Length: 231
Image 1 (cartoon, helix red, strand yellow):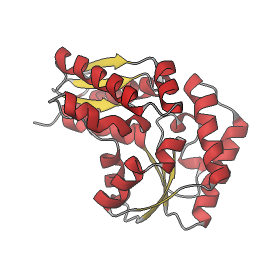
Image 2 (cartoon, rainbow, N blue to C red):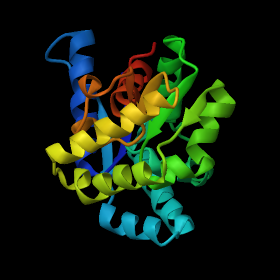
Image 3 (cartoon, helix red, strand yellow):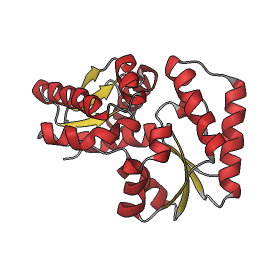
Image 4 (cartoon, rainbow, N blue to C red):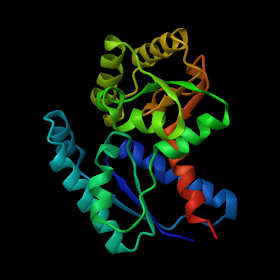
């Protein structure tokens, strides 16, 4: 079994989901009492969030590259960034380490394509929804058409992530707000919804959406198990 390197803490709430899903899946595939071989480096999200909000992405990238180096030195065979937004820094990380980094978009887009879906709605942080580092990979590498909420919807989705979900706050009113945003994306022609933030699965599930949903947290974690158990 390969050793999985996880860069967590963005937030630790969703990082715990990665740890749970990966270990449960390894046990399911290999049988109990098997569990995964994992190294985790957890960043201080408070520091990282300040760099994000002030546009200091080079400094944020340097922090992420340092985290990847620590996992490489610890013996990780491959690395996952347990977040969507910080894939903005993946080029800086890949320049710093030789260890492969499993991109969160790839298993997600693969699952979308497997459902014969061409047009997807994307929920995530403002950075993920509005910048091109994420949507361009979906569009250029996988031929998907990406829809994002309108300005008001993007503000709601972003605010709930940073004011509530990263701190483990689950608000029924916010769940209803997300349901409304997903319904609006369906009205715009989306055929599925990508939960493009690893905390979104803490608030809403497939039952809250009028469309098929693609939970990046789960899909990324399962892809890690595939890689770890690959012969």
